[in-house]
Image (cartoon, rainbow, N blue to C red; front, side, top):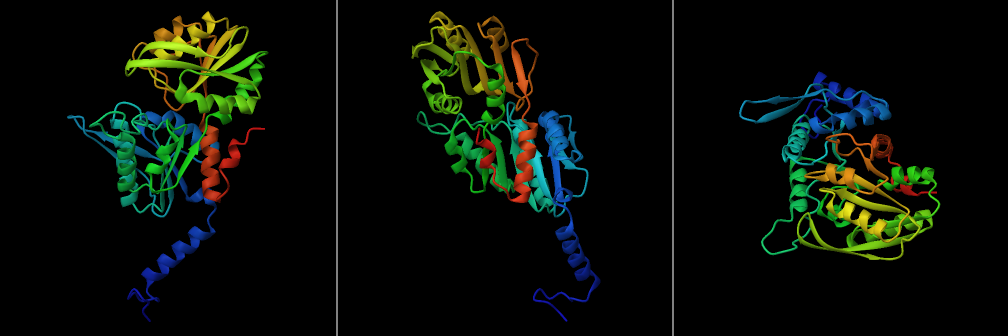
Amino acid sequence: MFNSFGRNEYSPYFCTDFQTIKQNSLMPKKKLVSIFAGRQSRYLAEKIAENYGIELGKSIVTEFSDGEFQPSFEENIRGRDVFIVQSTFSPADNLFELLMMVESAHRASARNIVAVIPYFGFARQDRKDKPRVSIASKLVANLLAVAGVTRVITLDLHADQIQGFFDVPVDHLYASSIFIPYLKELNLPNLTMASPDTGGTRRAASYAKMLNTDFVICYKQRAKPNEVTKMALVGDVEGRDIVLVDDIIDTAGSMTKAAQLMVDNGATSVRAFCTHPVFSGQAYQRIEESPFTEMVVSDTIPLKKKSDKITVLSTSKLFADVIERVESNKSISSLFKIQ
């Protein structure tokens, strides 16, 4: 007897396929999950896999003398849900390595391919802010879709509308779920949230609402990227313990200027909470010379050097919890309902 595909239902090949499907359906969810890492995010992926309760998948990257490289999965991933952890910070090789791993997982017959992108690079290019420029974040979304990604998990996008650039589900996570508990433990007597620019007003307001406190705003003008020419304060900070919140710190120019502005206007202490520590150029020097009591960041990007002023909080448990919820079809938004 032949089925609708012309295959003999009593052949050993058909029985093998059926048995594989049956075994997969009876197998515990964790047995069908594989977590892999790009080279630059392996430190984080190892902790995510440990929190999830499995070993990190085996993969290698072969490098050629001219700089070309070739990622390879060193274990069977056919029919599995593959989660690939890679932040796409500079250089662009990190993004291209992620794309190659997604594409190779697709060719290896993975059931689902989820790109776990703790830091989504090129997110600052989410619109045409002047003529004849690329909307690079849309381009990255297109490249991931073409490579074969079926889902994206990311943390604190620079702009929420980037989720709409994808035609696959996007789980947009918030670092507030790890920052708020730490901030509460500080027990600051005169807490006031602050934004280093008007673009982060919504973020500072949401933190202030969760913590039932006030917030202030810094207004800045730029002559060109990474160069602030003027900054003014909107709100009263005298005698207050200020906490500046932002998603990205690049050269730390804006953030350190904002901290100095707060101190000059009578703030008792100034701290910063930032999700993605890009820290390029003179960032570390500026942070060391700044009036910050502490700068709290996540581990979406590895630090280039240590500093007594910088505290790193891990996102590994958050990502592991989300992977668990994706696999069990549970709500993810409930993770961010801060009590």
